[in-house]
Image (cartoon, rainbow, N blue to C red; front, side):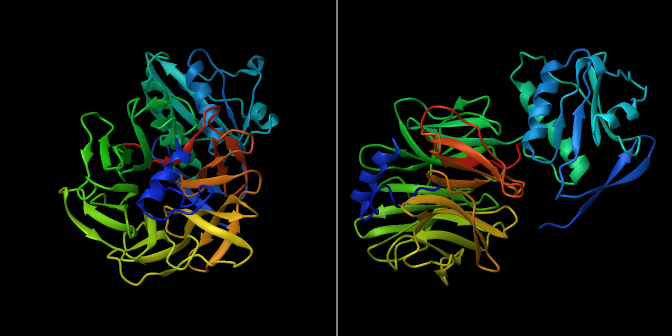
Length: 439
């Protein structure tokens, strides 16, 4: 979910100015989930999104790495208060034995997650402590602790635990792309397992995930131009997006069905959004025609019918919306003249209800969320410079870049509780893009 600010100390104008600017880059309803009980009995669990029930991960022999990742994932889901249980209080259940529910109730736990290993297979059981019952079970085989595949296996397991309780899976089995040192990097949702997508010696910008999270589109800068490339995570040479072979092309974004890629192309008379059919690698169409204005940072609504984007057609950069074919453009985000400044980096929420972006407030960018239907704004940040928001697939978490510690790091905010945490340290991170759930 890539985007690029129009402002980096000065507004972007013509193509040369765009290239110059790039130098500064180097109350929700209660949910119910009916969950299966072993033996075919179905139990109904009521979950109140306004509360964070307490959960304890039952200690036991082995699986220390799995338990550690599970605890971190469930804590970062912001759905639970995790409890640390002293090892001396371990209650071993065995393959069929019951837990001591009274003991865990004394710990203040609402849920207990138990892992039992038998002949290489692990059984995960989630217990309702108050009800004294097993809510759900899952059998799996985890990789060895030294196997890099273990983390994603555990991430998927933790997402399933969140689904058992809330009815909606967590977001641990996702990745975040970002730019640092001119390279696009990938990391797990918790900031671990960082790998490079693009090679050293090239300058890449604006990563954008495909809806299936198996490809990333990005801009590769060089020799006064910047084509948009699509790289498969499985490997192979990147593909050049039609229409982007020449000039400077930035801020790509896939359509929800993955068939089209919208991006901005800079020319001497302005910057315009165009769209290419990347399923058939053909058929480029220009969507905006504003002369001597900059139009960029397209983001598709989840239904694919509308595109929000940034434009300078009326002066400072503001966020507009148009039909997916480029018609009926109008101002989308209300603008407080004299109070706030330019708006940039829009991204539609997964449910289409909200739009996240950053806006200049008192000389620095801050993260905002717009309720699209009511056109109501909510400011999420205030400390330091905060920009480039990107939604998690749960529509509850937003990753963004902040310099509140003196370095440009990627942070995550839970928009329901306001909890904020850093997931990168050191370096100078930019332009995060959160994937959908990985296949």
